[in-house]
Image (tube, rainbow, N blue to C red; front, side, top):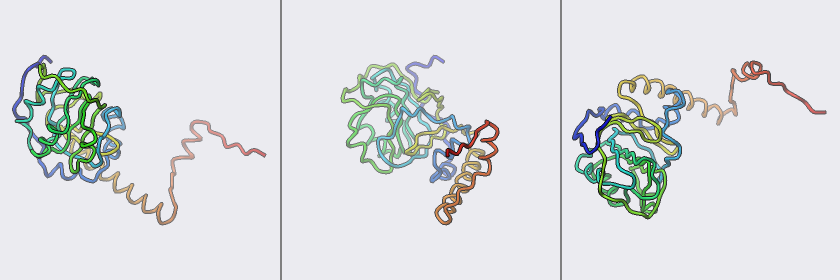
Length: 228
């Protein structure tokens, strides 16, 4: 899709009441109900501690260039999570403390960059706002383009469209299509409920039942050996 140097000023966002229901659900639980293969690449890591839930605001930039991130600053809305496809380029930072502090002030919930950032010491201390990036470097960005805003991008090996639901914690990031949100939410809440019960049982009785384990070991032909 050829969309270079185009800016989509608006897109449909998921109702905040739906987003709120994802708070407190580990990304691992969500990924489990989505086939255990939907997380953004583990190369893109959290810089600070916390979690995030919000609408995907998507940006594609040239390698080491942040012109279109600057253009996006006028369009970010409360509840957005900014995802920047920088092509995985690691030798020039796309952004740092100033621009990230600004979108946080606008009400954004986080930023995810398939590329590099700088000012990591300051960003690592941010609260109530998550920062993810592939790497860090003091080299600053160019401002020449090309790029585009709020069209589908690929970030960390995952296709993301504006308005997708983005959930992140210390384990990583998952992206959910709005059409799948109700089913994913229902199943993820059930997994979390079951895991909470299991953890309580382990703490109380040191009991961790795995009724499937022996059948699986038999299926693959595992043998127990007792050395004398």
